[in-house]
Image (tube, rainbow, N blue to C red):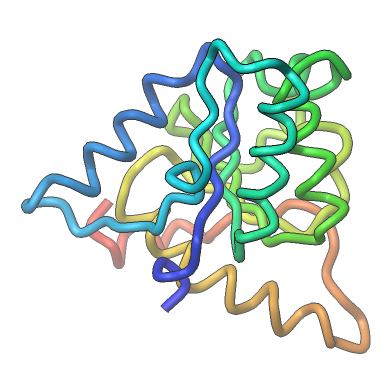
Length: 172
């Protein structure tokens, strides 16, 4: 199952509370949600120099099999600024051709192209709402599909979303 692979969660610093909530879901015995968090590898302190932080982010991404990108109104603009760490993360995800699950923090179940970082706009990706069941499903289902797509004669490109019945089947 994909959730056993290391998962890198990229987000704008303004959205750190959502990342912490995902970590809390993991610890809650009443929520079936788990991921092997790549952020636990080579911790970089906020007081570290930018080059040290970038190096540590690179090490984490090198050990990653899949990514989650938290989408909000600040994601795309911040990912477009070369001075931000999110810019570096998004560029590294693209270079490594990692599977990306975009998670809409506003609970939208559709592709929100206006929030997707330009670098990943044509990247085969999946968009889901910020709910543990659908994120877990995407980490299992879409990531496997992404890996099969790499060897397909006509590979898929761009962002996708699940049909409404997938959410219904998950009880959402």
